[in-house]
Length: 73
Image (tube, one colour):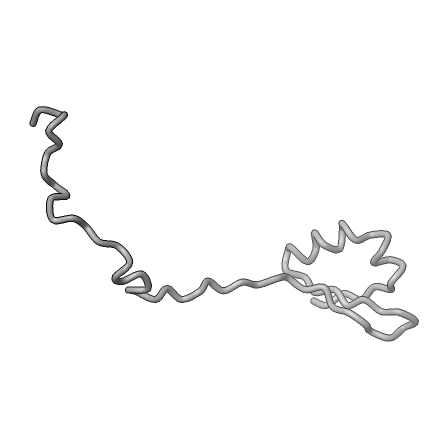
């Protein structure tokens, strides 16, 4: 449901209006009876992961799994 408020009310009750927006409500702010802005929830969409983005940037040594001599193994 859209709620309409004037600019003075928006200034004095901003915290309350933001809480209502966080609950999914959309607020229309008017000045002299004319709508000038909309407060609405900010929606983010996760970026699509691209497999193989770092291919070729890491090199594993051939002796990676060889026990270290200082460990006596």
